[in-house]
Image (cartoon, rainbow, N blue to C red; front, side, top):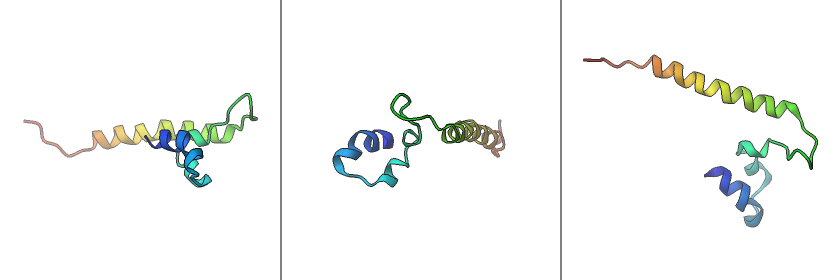
Length: 67
């Protein structure tokens, strides 16, 4: 939802540039029009791999009793 509002309505509503950076799509270059910078893409990939891994670890460490 945030990506939709910032990406599509941000220009129309005049949002500041920092709001565009809240969305991960603000860090991905538009490939034919801009040169590709690999560092933001690599950082997004690392985040995309680490966040679910932490979620799985937290899910496995929960303290529930099964009956």
